[in-house]
Image 1 (cartoon, rainbow, N blue to C red):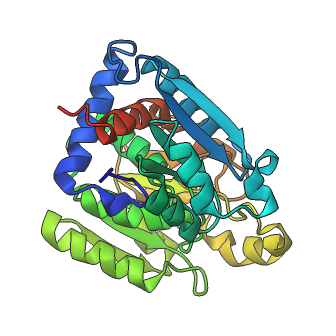
Image 2: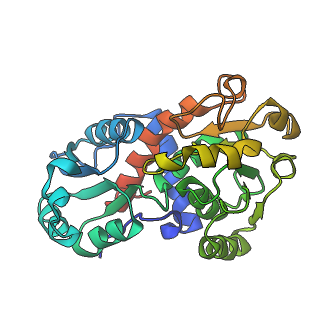
Length: 308
């Protein structure tokens, strides 16, 4: 049976560390790993607009010796109601792996159940696990070993990024704090899953509605847009509710010296993050964006059996 990466805890702590070590090696030697030589094809499907995901998967698959088959789902039969499982069976007979940026988590689970090849979650409404792999690689490059570090996410705690920080961060042994107002807090089941993982890795999880308390003493501060794709009609309500959770200079001052600032981009300066913070010396957002390439290359190689 193929291995899939549909949510962050699909990798055990040891497996996550293997992928991150491989990502670091691939970053040092970008063209030295060719598990897709042939070339083998990887399908990359998009139900949602994309910049970083499209670029990083396309470039990464090519650097692994393969061919990226980029499919705009709106131009495929998926947009006309073809069952996900039928598309999965067609793809699975012709490609080595599938990455999909889609909406409901149920869609990518259906794809994985029928494809017969590894399926990677390139973003769903529930999780963004490839981004968190890249973020962990970025944090390690500056702070070294991850266990014991504190990461605080500020903003919409019910978002895919918050959910992935909980699961991926707990897997890495981080102390993960989610700072969000009532009505925007993470799914209770995901918090429980993350807490169970943290109990085994030495990490911890906490959900707070006080942004200042959540920020105090953090090694890493992270945020994301307040209005995701499909939520545009809620923008005014969201901005009002989340305004106290903006990542600004005042909150950064409460964190540890040398605190890193993460944002998966695109960013709205002056909204979820101030221009002074995202363009300042603590921000590593461009390293994050680049590390999507290396982390995803490592993940694909690992899923396809090219493991350390």
